[in-house]
Image 1 (cartoon, rainbow, N blue to C red):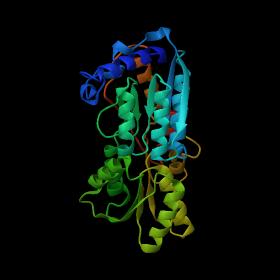
Image 2 (image 1 turned 135 degrees about the horizontal axis):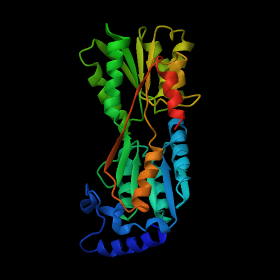
Image 3 (image 1 turned 90 degrees about the vertical axis):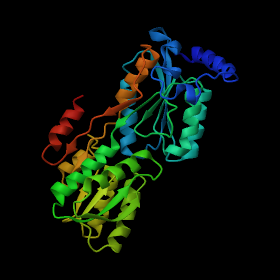
Length: 336
């Protein structure tokens, strides 16, 4: 829907909200095909559209890649006249303010990767309830006031990471440390929960955890402290590859990288990404976590141009990457 048309829709909703409601949480919640992404508010292929992208923190390489994937996919849709990228720099208040600005500008659709779930829930709901389709990418908010969520199954990936450690790296058990993502972000909770299920009954003990905030430098600092506190660490589980790499750097500085196993998540197919780190032996394994950027643009096209409903959730595939298949996976992901 063009900005002009949606402004008219929002005006109608504003009046309706005084009465029976239009686009309220209760009326939109879980209603496949309902809400602002339904055919009733789609202007079709004859309009030009502006998409707003609210990113949690582009200091993370994964999010740089996500933005690049969004930009590349949007360039192939002639009706997507403009894509506005905003970076919250891991600041919840800033992201709330930026989304409010995008609402005021009446962008035609929002793509949001929330920094943390709870602080962003209200403003995401406000956008959705004002008639703007909202695509959540990678991270969730509380409740269901959004059009669709696109991301991989974080809990399943965490479980697979735990099983890999238990079955392949430490079959006799061992002592490991966990570097978690930002505490209020949904992937951190899901990857941690899944991992614990994966190592259950294996003889592996998590002797320490720390919040690495998804960042290499923060993880390196936390790992340095854990190395001082624990004379034995057999393996490190990082909720993403940069944190696992930061832990490896700290261990190498302490002279303890040799013999310690490092496992991460993301598997970016870039020169500084996790797949290369596996191939070069710094990480024992990683798990591909697709950015979903191209899939988000496909969903945006269906909502705005094709006037189609989209599923409330799209789960993206993952893959274990070890030294044996790292080169092949790297080539394949870069050939798309």
